[in-house]
Image (tube, rainbow, N blue to C red):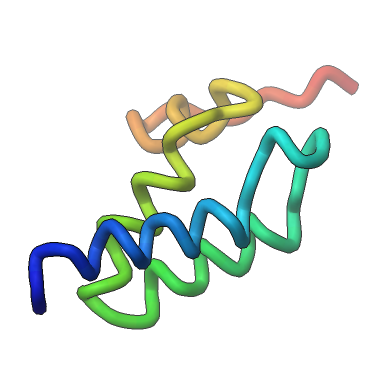
Length: 72
């Protein structure tokens, strides 16, 4: 793959999922997460977009082996 293609792909993914556009753009987030699993060329740019801004620390805690606690 050419060196500029990941940047173009990342710009497209940033357009699909822009957390600043709405409070929680769940459709865009799900779409970019699906694209990250589609092929190796999409994985890194999609993950960069997904991890660029977190709305909570849940994802980070779950990745480090922690568990989610409900406040009910």
